[in-house]
Amino acid sequence: RPLADCPDAALAAVAGVLTDIDDTLTHEGAIEPEALAALARLRAAGLPVIAITGRPMGWSEPFARDWPIDAIVAENGAVALFMEGGALRTEYAQDEATRAINAQRLAETARRVLREVPGATLARDSAGRVTDIAVDHSEFAQLSAERIDAVVAIMRSEGMSATISSIHINGWFGTHDKRSGAQWIVQRLRGRDVEAERDRWVYVGDSTNDQLMFAHYP
Image (tube, rainbow, N blue to C red):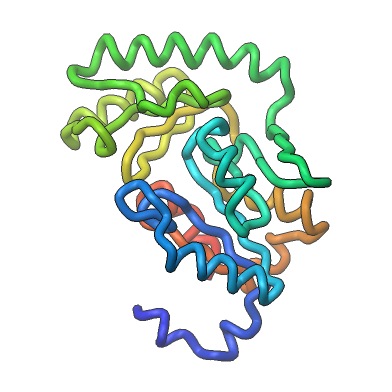
């Protein structure tokens, strides 16, 4: 349904905005002036805006620093980046020991995917990833639906969580996801329980890895 159909009373009660990045804030890989202006208007109105993305920590750093938003939660809930005291701060959902153990498992799964799925390639932003792996299916490479399913099946057979964004197939070890990332960062930065007030938060996204959030936020 068109956003214009949303009652003014519901919009007036909004406490904050959670948003995907790729193909939601961006178009053909870049954020457009209209989107930046909208973010600035939300900030001026005193509404927190938090981007939650499958993109890696390294890729997210300049945008967390420069965009008029409160934070970016990257790698599907695993890493939060936000400005504090004039400097960019990074925090993780998993402790350092867990990340070190998982790093080897991630590398082993990545090798298996590349070996077993013809045409599979790691995303070009993989160098900036610290808690997951991403296989390109639509950004710079193309995978058929059958091969996308095969990648997901391998990830899940290794015990990973796996989701499909508009450009990548992401896999990681752990129970975190976009929803837990939103809860964590709103509590961390605002001291508020987003679960208790979820009827007052907006979620914006475009792909299957946003389904969890669409189902949770009205």
